[in-house]
Image (cartoon, rainbow, N blue to C red; front, side, top):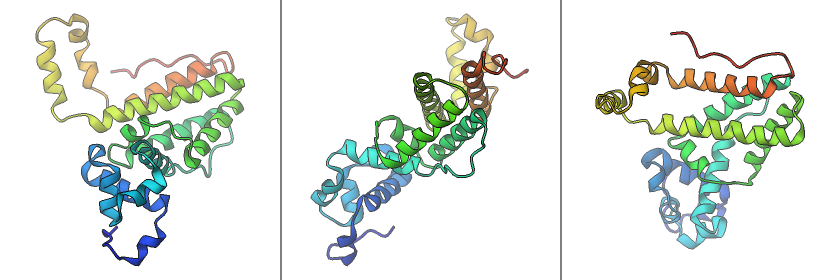
Length: 221
C-alpha cells in the first residue's frame, strides 16, 4: 500500500479493513513492536484521531489485526469426520499465523470477539462436537488447541539463530543432567514435527475411550 498524503481523496474511504491492512504492512516491515496507532495513522496519511475513530485504543488495533490474521484461515472444503475436521482446522490456523511476521505474538496478546475469530472458534467447537465431545469439553478442548498452536508458533517465529550452540554452552555446566542426557532430542526435530506430535497427542487424549485409540509415542530416532 502506498502511503497516503494529506489531502488524498481516498482518505474519505478509510474503514477498519484499511486500518488493519496498514497495521499488517507495518508488522511485515518492522515487527510487532513497531505497530502503534500513530504509526498506522502516518502510514495512511491521516490524523491519529481518524484511526482512533475505528479502533479506540492500541488494544483495539491489535484485536483488529488479530482478526485479520485469523481471517486468512479458510473454512471451506473441510472434512466431514469430526476428528479429521479438527486436525485440518488446527493445521489451517497454524498456517494463518505463520503467514504473518510475529503473527502468533499478535494474536496471543488479544482476546478478540471479532467476526473471523468467532467464525474459526465456531468451526472448531462444531468439529469437536461432531467428534463426540460434550459441549463443555468441546469448548475447553478448543481453548487447548488454540493455546497449543499459539505457543509453539510464537516460539517458532521468535527462535533466534544459533540456539543449538547456546543450548550446548548452557548444558556444558553440568547443572542440568537430565537435559544433558536428552540434549540430542532437544534440537533434533523441526517445528513441523513437534507440531504434528503435539497435535496427535492432544487429539488422541480427547478421543480416548471414544474410538479405542491411545496416545502416540514420540517419533523413533
